[in-house]
Length: 80
Image (cartoon, rainbow, N blue to C red):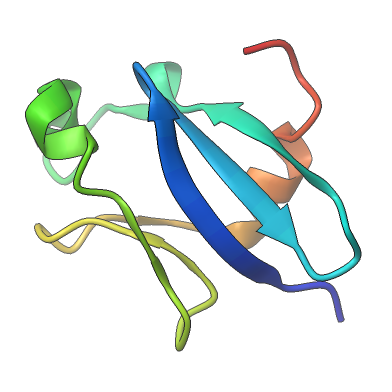
């Protein structure tokens, strides 16, 4: 099973992600920041608080927002 193993804020609304099979790349999440849980992340000072959660194997924010690792994997390699 391929897992997200690390992630970090890169720039703007882009997070760099690393997967256990060596796949890595930037994922631009700007178009995904809709709805009550994600709209606060449109503020870059809040978005930059993204962190990798090693127990959940995905990215999370202090307000409880997270993104499915499968979604992140599907977006790696797209232009950012």
